[in-house]
Image (tube, rainbow, N blue to C red):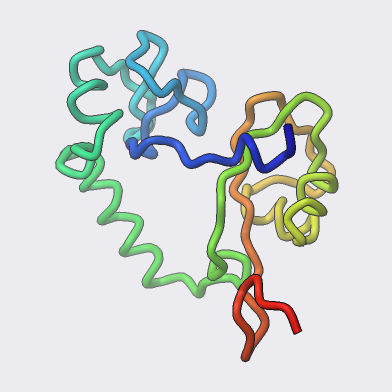
Length: 149
């Protein structure tokens, strides 16, 4: 199995749903350990709401999600985007033994770019199952992705 085999996108779900101690990780099915991280303190989410909203495309109609998205838009307008944030990205699911350097090398980015995209220090330890945003470099100017000379 190559490193690309586990880079499949998750089903569409709310980015505010996570585990109690880890706002970035959630199961793809309803689970009592899920919390809504929209507020200052993560709140429990009943299993029916997880099924009907959080873990489906319906999450965009949730009032908590809408309020958080509006706040992010306001702050995004006020902030200048960094070059890393402007790049398209994928989610990488880390495996035991992964390091920022190894993951960055696999995607053709620097460990510093990978760390910045995930609010980590460049020497941060990576946990098995941790999801990392990997910024992707744009294709070369004047060429097509995958085209050879």
